[in-house]
Length: 280
Image (cartoon, rainbow, N blue to C red; front, side):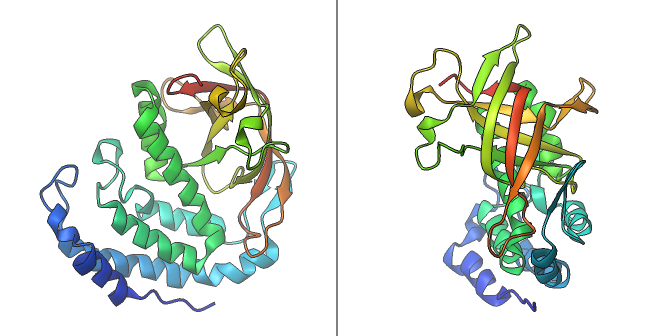
């Protein structure tokens, strides 16, 4: 599939309509230079056009595959993700404090629009990581931020969100996944989640799941839901990866047009997790 981003239109929207030049010198955009807009868009277009778009058809034909060792990405996707990661695209608008470039989010969204247009199956992966990064920045404890944000922002790890369950779709308050407190302050997460985008794969070293679950004696419905961070691979005190957590993909859903995006059925069997923000 051929792809060429409408660079002139995008630059006009960002420079003349959104007037991103007014952000120069303001916090948190201290190092932002409006002259960077066009070069960044041009480089993003190269990745979208030359790497992502050619993988769209083959990725959809082959799809992600569930094996005994977990989910394997479609051919070429691991290499494409490595180029995405090494290009610093994951941290485009993330705070410099956590290794990001601190650029306006509007610019990052324009870049992500290209990646989605060229290959939506691929674009869905960093989209979920963006959400995990923002949730941790807004609600994570300092230790959680220090443990997870640098590698998420760098693209070494990816993120997910785990909301939906077989009996809890539009009514998320019906979820049954349990979070039982452990003596060390962590929680044992048990339950099943469905339709989890990029819930398992082999394109990054670790996957950081953000999971909605219910504490013992929590109120019924959506008022009794809490958010937990559950890594696929446990993270040691020195930042290295430890043993595998008790979470795995047990099935893949087939979504039309995005077969290369692993839409997972996830099983949490007493997986170790930590509360993000306040209870309920």
